[in-house]
Image (cartoon, rainbow, N blue to C red; front, side, top):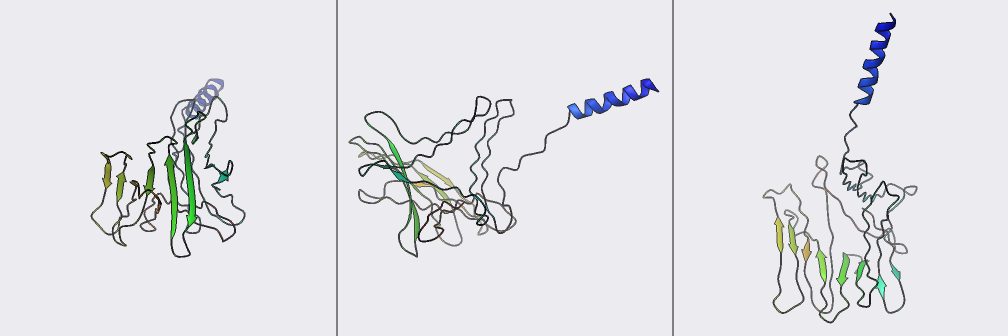
Length: 221
């Protein structure tokens, strides 16, 4: 009897030690009311690295991802999206947009409404030198039927070079993201970041940046 109980205990201990962890769902909708994007990039080793970009709008009790736009002073405006390291074991993605040197580089993530009808995001990534280069992330819908991704990256010099990353589907059910990185003109550069769900069955990355009300502006994903 003692031998049998020892054997059973050993088998249970072995099965417990070799248990497989539950799978991680990367991008999902909580339900019809709450949509969020979890961009979880993980490694399997002990020092797991991941990025959690969770932007949800559940209800009044839920926590929002507030894109905090602050002015350093009257002359300079910047947005620092600081995702910091917790400790040595876990590494996060630090999105630190600023340089400390004399030729300071800012990333201005300016999200505003032009008027009640039109919403846009100004993602202005500029260099402070004379030959300023901007990255305009322009994400728009071509029309109601077709959405595609145009990744257009331009330099501000005379011989402009673009990189077009065009990801498309041929049917009307699929929606694309338009990632258009170009300079609009010297005066104004806009970015429209519009990411939508195709239907209830398929889950996309929804990056919806809207105003909660007239007084307060949240980044609602």
